[in-house]
Image 1 (tube, one colour):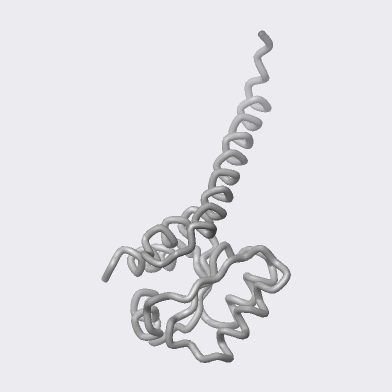
Image 2 (cartoon, rainbow, N blue to C red):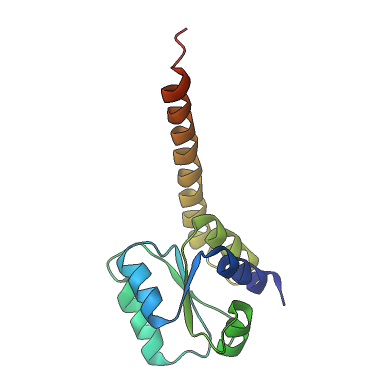
Length: 137
């Protein structure tokens, strides 16, 4: 199994992925899908569904070089035509592990990951300030 499929398996173990049409649709409607992936041999109907999920949002989707069987095996199911990664850092790592990803997608995911990191730093500083007080200089 290559690195990209290993990352998908890690997403599954961490609970950071939605597998299948209905769960992916729910995550996309809730605007929690950071990256939607589609198997290369997914039907036209499935691709149209994914496009309708992301229409009008800034949620990206990519077609993978893996078939449904390979994707399903990595995720621990029989077959999988689509999945949604819900963690931005895992989505970025997954996109970087693929060879044929647009640079604009990588830039956008990198920007989002930096924003998440910055928000977490600010939240940590806020909790510290509330706990021990802010030092004035």
